Amino acid sequence: MTNTLQRFAYGASQGLRVSWFWGQKLVAASRSERPKLPPEISATLPDRARLLRDLRRLLARDWRNIADGIYAMPANLVPNPVAELRRCRRFLADLKSVEQRRTAGARTEVAEQQEPGRYPRYYLQNFHFQTDGYLSESSAALYDHQVEVLFGGAADAMRRQALVPLRDAVARRGARHARLLDIGCGTGRFLREVKHNHPRLAVTALDLSPFYLDAARRHLAPWSRCDFVLGLAEQAPLAAASFDVVTAIYLFHELPPKQRRLVAGEIARLLRPGGVCIFLDSLQHGDEPDYDGLLDQFPHTVHEPYFASYVVADLTGIFGAAGLCLESAEPAYFSKLAVFRKT
Image (tube, rainbow, N blue to C red; front, side, top):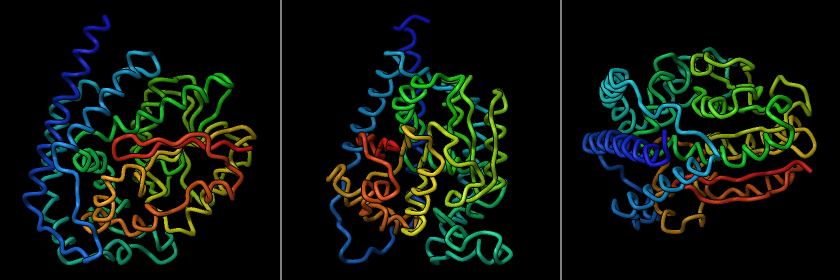
């Protein structure tokens, strides 16, 4: 495929993708009551035109990375339309339950369904008010679609920005010798892009949800050299200094402050000297000042119990205390991409 044809295919697919998910975002908003916000929460928000303009910038950046050969075209460039329609129907059907939890402030449903001691208390949440939290097969099947709706079709493009520092990290040791751990891997959505670009790279997927880890197994089924570990991010059952790269993708904003420090320490323990942690998560206060109002409102509209402490957390200090030095940090639409190196 020539570069011109590639660019056309990319632009057409991403245009359809944004229209598809942004449309569902508008439908979801029309079915939701606007929550009452504390008076100290800023009402100054970027308008829809600004959000779409910044989304176009993200996609232009994504395309430049592809055109420059930094990473390949998306693995799901041409999605299965039947599967997409099926996920859309499930998403819309679940909206009523989500809205009922939101209006009732229901946050303990998951904790009530689980036997005591099986999972840490902080994990037993209906994150995003979603059904079953992270602890069911149906939740794992719906999660990625929910996230794409939330970000208007931008979530995969934001994740792909982590492939830029990953390319350099893999090149240092070579794909045959390097080892990568995705800590809190979820459904394996990011690891699928990793293996799509680095099929010979040995990867380990770690997550606390057996249902999401099963989904990761399915996503990574086409590739070899993939291991799957059920366990806590703050107490991983893995050997010290056994990885060249640890990726943390949208993990830290869902951790309480104490667990953030513990997980940073665990990442440092698992990395070899000179290894890197590639961190991708939500923006924090000051990264894009015009978005600060959105960050303040977010935990009130989408149940994220630890988000307010995350947006003001000193990540450089947290990782620095664990022995990891910040090498770079930059915004990517609603996300922050950072690289920390073990000294």
